[in-house]
Length: 402
Image 1: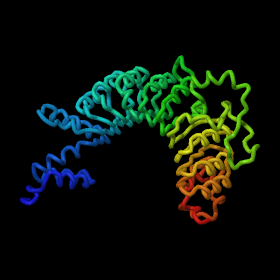
Image 2: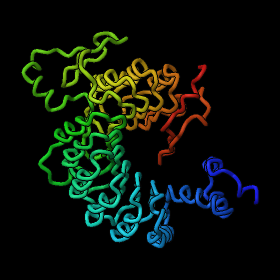
Image 3: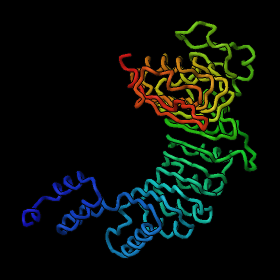
Image 4: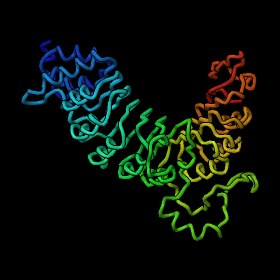
């Protein structure tokens, strides 16, 4: 122990940064005062609450240290994940002690309303990442977020937040730092709003730095969010010329008549992509999405590594062939509930994409027997009530060397 007392602070810091387990960090904090000083910020940097008891314990610890003249524990907290249900009062009691918070995840926010969340940005002004699940917050909370976080928030995700509507996107348009946006099962069309789904799409496409976008809802058609639609200004400029323009497919390996259903907006080789840095994109449901519309997205966003379409009734294997041709770095493809894709199309996709790791193909018509040359461990298989088995996901390594 005497030798540990003489270790330089820099070396102790390096040692502690290589300690992975929380219990080991606690042990290190008990060695001596120097170890305690360097271990404490690491112990409080990321907090997780799986249950009410843990949240109460963390809140009590933060409150008891708030009177310290230097370095109260809340100053060390940068990331918080709360998986248990909590009330408005519990959220505010906790959040006011973590002013340096950057990352907040509320996974079971069933009882969180505008009454508390409107005040959260005042307590944590530096937030950059936010996830909210199952909350009843409304546009009032979104407006508060915009007033305080519009400059720095870069990751935002809502799931099962059914108090929101299309006007959400008019506020999000101000979040110019936003790079990742995910909205799932929020039933945006259910609440009265002046904005339409097309207005919402125009607003979100005005965000300049999007790299990851996901919108998922089983009850309305998300196709307008396909980022091949020009923004409002571009549309106004093109309205006068649109009738005279003929849609032209970018140079491809396909015959000229391969895609016979051009998208509603003409695509030319000179057109800039809506989101030039886009790497992850998921759209669902998109019942009227066609192969040609998917091609326009694929060709104008060549950096995609993760691409998903859910519940398209018109898309076929042509989209899978386009992915193989134009997205050399693709890693994951999801075409769930896309009923017209075939096992042959999935097989070609995996064989032609060297970096592809997984293909989600949950449509009920692709069976294990279609891949009888593949090890069953390379497939995720689901069983229907009737006893029929079908493939929900395939792993790319199953076809290497085929």
